[in-house]
Image (tube, rainbow, N blue to C red; front, side, top):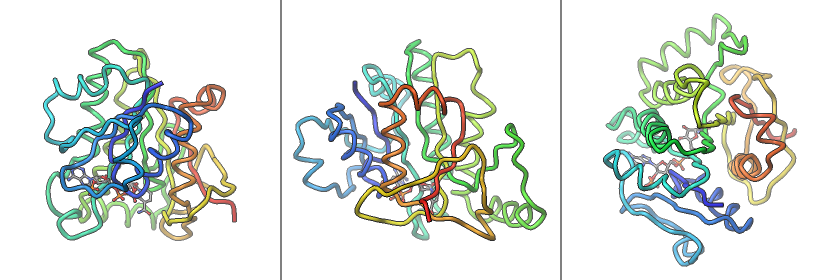
Length: 237
Ligand SMILES: NC(=O)c1ccc[n+]([C@@H]2O[C@H](COP(=O)([O-])OP(=O)(O)OC[C@H]3O[C@@H](n4cnc5c(N)ncnc54)[C@H](OP(=O)(O)O)[C@@H]3O)[C@@H](O)[C@H]2O)c1
C-alpha cells in the first residue's frame, strides 16, 4: 500500500507520516521547499519526499503524484499567521481537494481520500443544524476569515459535489479544537457533532486525529463504517 500525504510538514501531517511508516506503508509526502521536516522523516528511505507547493502544481503533475497511490490523506491548512490567514492562496484546501479528485477520477483509479476537516463544518445532509448564535458567528467567519470559507468549500466538495457514481471513496474527519499530545489516547468518534464548536468546544489531540485517519485507511471494517461520511472526533474526557 502507498499513501500520498498532503500537508506532510504540518503538525498533524507529520504524525500521519510517522504512523503510516510504523505500519510499513510506503509514503509519498508533498512538502513546500521552505518546510521544516524532522530528520526521522527526511532520512527515512520508505518516504518519498516531493518538494514543491501543491497549490502551484499543474494537473498533469497531480496526476503523476496520485498514479500509484492507494489513498490520499490531506492535512493541508492555512498557517496561523497574518499572511497565512489573510493572504493567498485563499482556496488552498478546496482547490487541492478538487484537483486531487479530478486526477483520481481521470485515472479511473479506485482510491480512498481522507480529508482533515473541522467541526466548524456543518453537514446538513445528515441533519446537522447551527443554532441562531452559531449561524451569526459562522456567517461572520465566512466573510472575515478566508481559511474558514476554504475549509467549508473543501468539505462541501466531498459531501455535495462528488457524484455517488465515482471510483473514489472518501471520509472527512472533523476534529474539534486541536492540541498536541505525545501519545495516542482514548477518543470518541461520532456521526454528528455532540457539542457546539463555538460555545462549548471539545478537544482533539493531533496524534489522535492522525491515528484515526491511518486506522481508516488500513482497517477495511472501519472504512466501510465511515466511508462517505463526516465523523467527528473528540478526545475522551
Ligand atoms: N486549529 C484547530 O483547532 C483546528 C480544528 C479542526 C480542524 N483544523 C484544520 O486542520 C488543519 C490542519 O491542522 P494542523 O494544525 O496540522 O495544521 P498546520 O500545522 O498549520 O499544517 C498545515 C500544512 O499545510 C501547509 N500549508 C500551509 N499553507 C500553505 C500554502 N500556502 N501552500 C502549500 N501548503 C501550505 C503547511 O506547510 P508548511 O509546513 O510549509 O507551512 C503544512 O504542511 C488546519 O489547518 C485546519 O484547517 C484546525
